Length: 186
Image 1 (cartoon, rainbow, N blue to C red):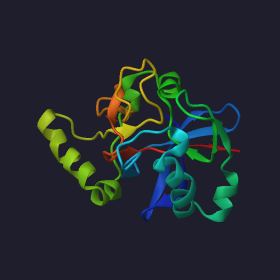
Image 2: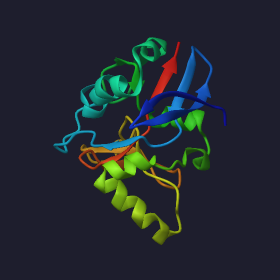
Image 3: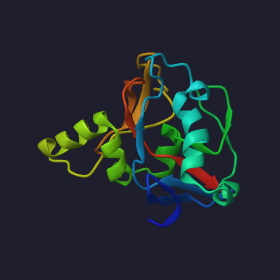
């Protein structure tokens, strides 16, 4: 796995995994950097309307990157099956992108950064339970789309489980789950 460091979040440098070198460099944070609710009211509308999308492209972008670093981040046209297209600088991966770029479940397993665990009660409670199940380092994290087969509840979003399995039925959008941002460098 090739990595690079760019930006800082909560006082720690952000390490990025290089996923692809087509049309710029596609990066995925190596660790879960925060925990957020997709929609606090438990009503899923779409990626285009999600509070996480807004947070990633405003508050996170400004907090994590200097103005000079921000100029290196490309605007990516994002197609999500259950959403209007968007143009984002920071995004979450879709299930299709994830299975194409990281086809093996073990490649998707990631821990949460210590500051993310400290900042989120739900993430902290979850990580404290992991050793009970024989898992010590991994974390659940959000994807940007719902179940493509339509079998999930309308207020659920896809996630990656602690064992790297993609859960299309996901979790309710008002749960705090890990945020593993992606971006494309120009």
